[in-house]
Amino acid sequence: MAGLEAHYSASDIEARILAALRTAGLDPEQRLAPEQLAPLDHFHTGGLRASRELLELAQVQQQDRVLDIGAGLAGPARTLASEVGCRVDCVELSPDYCAGATLLNRLTGLDDRIDVHQVSALELPFPDGSFDVIWMQNVGMNIADKRGLYTEMHRVLKPGGRFAFQEMAAGSEPTSYFPLPWATDPADNCLVSADEMRTVLGECGFVVGVFEDTSDEHLGRSVANATPAAPGQLGLSVFVDNLGQKAANARRSLEEGQVRLVRGVFRR
Image 1 (cartoon, rainbow, N blue to C red):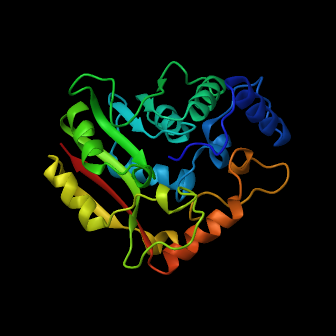
Image 2: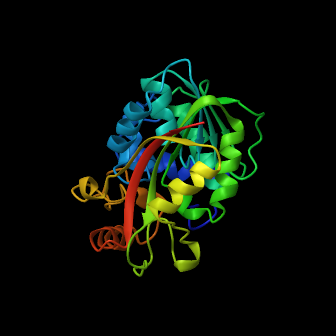
Image 3: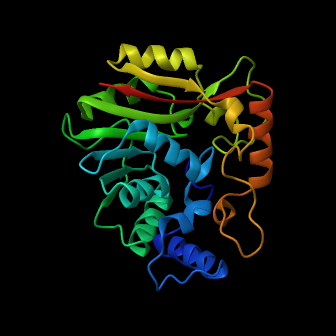
C-alpha cells in the first residue's frame, strides 16, 4: 500500500484519526468494532467486502499465523483477527500507517492479536517458515522488485502455506491516467501483467491454486474504496488528497483495460 502523501508525527496521526472518529459519531472511549472503521482502513479495491471474499477463498483458520504485507492502517488484519480469531503480523514501510494501525488496533481491543512492524517487505524480519498464510491486498503495484518480494515471502511461508492476494495488474494498454490511488505519477506505478505475475510466482516456488481476473465483477463496485465521504462520515480523505480524482482515474483505467484486477491463492 502506498504511503501517506504527507508525513505526520505519531501524535498528529492519532489526533487526526480521533477527530475523524468523533466527527463520524464514534466514541473512541468505547471499544469500536472493526467494521465501523472499514471506510477508513480498507484502502483497496472492493473494501471490506473484498477482504471477506479473499478470506473465504484462502480458508484462513483460527490456528493460522498470518503475515499481512503492506498492511496500511491494518483494516484487513483486524478483520482477520476479529472474524477468524487468528494472530496477524503486519508489515508496513510507512511510519504514518504504522502509527495509525497501532492506534486502531488498541481502539478495537485487538492489539493482543496483531503486531505492527515498520519494515520493508523485501527484508522480512522473521525466521524461515514462520507463517501459515501470507496476505496482500493492492500492494505489489508499488514494489518494482517482484522477484525479490516473492522470494522473501516464499522463505517465511511454511511448506504447504498459502499466499492469498488481490492485486492490480497491467492491462493491454499503457496506464495513462494519473494520479491513481496507488501512484501519483508513472514512476510510482510498478504494474506487471497477470501472466508475468503468475510466471514469476511459479519461478519463486509457488504453485497456483486459484488465480482469477475479477475486473468485470468490481466495475460495479467502488474501484478503490475511495469514493469521497460525505461530511461527517469516515473516509480515506482523512489522509489522502485528491481522492475523487484518483478514484475516477482508477475506474477509467479499469474500464479501458489499462489495468486489471486479479486475485489468487498460491501454495508454497
